[in-house]
Length: 199
Image (cartoon, rainbow, N blue to C red; front, side):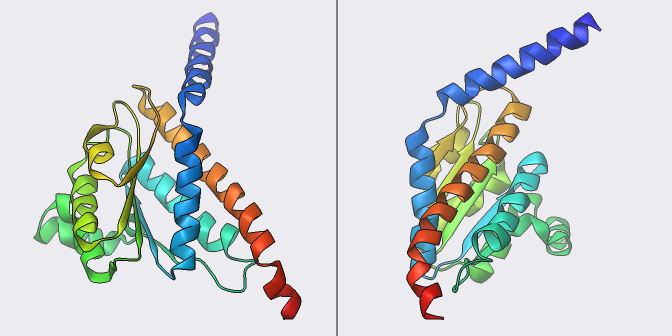
């Protein structure tokens, strides 16, 4: 019991310390970029592996329902790791490194936003689509942890959780997306009022 209590306290302390290190300006910029993509009629593409993939799927759901349901015009968002048949076919026939890249090649346009989520920041299948998106001219954002890895250097912008703990990175990436969602709801609810009053 004492060991469980010790490890619980240790985890929560690390979580609290990591929260204090987050650059709030990066979160504000992230939220504004999503709003700008919406205003430019762009699509938001999100992807990750494992727990980061779960966060990507969760955030995409928040965008499609939480951000959009009260608005006259909806946000457009696709989570690339939600299409398991396409991912398995690409991994089997081409390369696991290309599972998100090949899907992105089908859809991506310059006014779109591409969000890659990776704790280490070094997963090749996250790195490659960000490089491609930069070439197309889309805005790229990395949600990363640890030292930031390659995706922090590659992406146009990043939101960095500076801690060498994968679980805490994943916890805080989810918290960051919830923070962004709530901030955008506040902005869009205010801006959408005139449209609602005219309906």
